[in-house]
Length: 275
Length: 221
Image 1 (tube, rainbow over the protein chains, first blue to last red):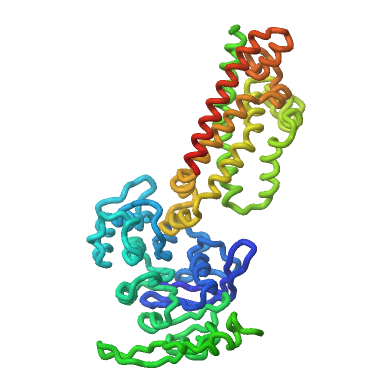
Image 2: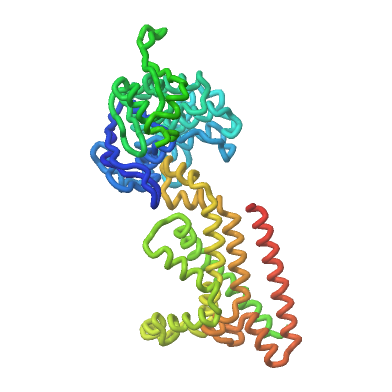
């Protein structure tokens, strides 16, 4: 399925966060949303998912506006992985993942054997089958993140929206999640994720959108978007973008920042700039 | 107690239970709309629902007569169509008590709904639950204690309603004379024993209700 966002304006009642956001996302593609804190990434996601009312523009799936879709239909197309939070209720990991089947279950029915099988399969896919009986409130942050991804996958969505799926994960789990994202795209799912780490975008994204002050500052392949100039413009820091060979023989780009006080305080556009 | 006092007690309980049920039916949706929805005329609804709290009950009763009396805005067409009028019936006492109790219920329930984490509702939405089912399965269960406290307050207010009831329903023994009205009549006619009995019963009932409300409030906090 293909997602198109056209001239979207988004924000909260009485407060606009961003506008003029236009991009498309096809099945099998990974789009990485990059940008400073408060740039509007989460608000944009929530607006695309209709958790917030759009202030302008429109969102279509295969050309059809989703504005009138029921929540059930939305949930069968869009899977959402929110930023992992401490759980409030001690549902087990298996129950949490099973909740992903909500939109596939009839109005007064309970989950079928098939639904349970899908949930179990997703636990296995993410390698957290051994956690199935543990309460969601008592597992680690990384395990919670993997549980939420499994839940979204149990929805069997065509489009997966992930809000900082690597935040608060240790290095190993970050890499595991990025690897999972690559696998999902190979299966034909359209994946949209936000991250704070440009290196993650280099690793898994086909395209990168740079969201700055509620507008798309750049949009394109990672190599074109993540540059010394664009990061200086958006973050007000100095970075060197360089290429390193990987163990698997391929080449990865990485960003290496410079920790100079000059770069932090004097560059125009940075909050600390005296102008 | 005299048979009149017993029937007043039974009537009062009947009226209060019916008014509480109506409050739940009407007030909880209003409270939800005020807490969660944005709609045209929202502040007007808020104002109308709150007014009975600050207006003298007789003023509310007067408005109810203007609206529902035999020559009222709604009452006249109803009378012409059916030959029946709500004024001076048991139903009038229920309507008066409902309107007077509504602000307490709506304000309590609204606060309870507003304190429910919206992200929990959003989680239900992203998993495909409709707004109605999210309200029934997520929002209201989480606001349960506040809703119960609001219903208890509404019940207590309905039980003690005097002014608006007198205006719209009158003071007809056995039909519209609730306990507060019967106490008034008993005092006016010098039956101080009857008055005292009813006062004691109503005080005891109110204490029970208040203790229940406090218990619920403590559990909410």
